[in-house]
Image (tube, rainbow, N blue to C red):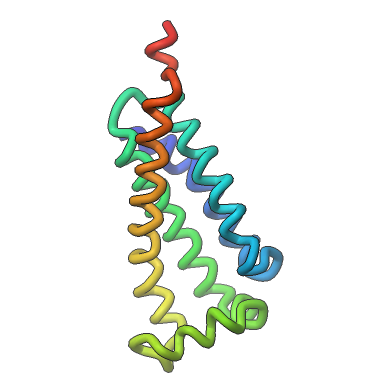
Length: 135
């Protein structure tokens, strides 16, 4: 595992964490994430020589740390701009504690996204030559 690369690629997640607080609406957020997943998969395929899936998985897990922490810290602003998301918390366990719900759901969503990011990285590794293969 290249933890330095995982951390560097997770900076996209940190940027999105702050962007999703008030700037990026729910409706177009998936487009941003798709671009980030493709870009990360490309970089992983170019830089790494093995463990592509796990590299992608851990990037998304780090992203979930950034997102969860940022959304919890700036909850009032996040809630003001994402009323539908906050309303969905009411049907979840601990519905009276939205920050706790985010803390519980963040890693679960991170793992699901990690499976997708890992798959993207694995597929990209089959399509893109690594630096080691080019030499």
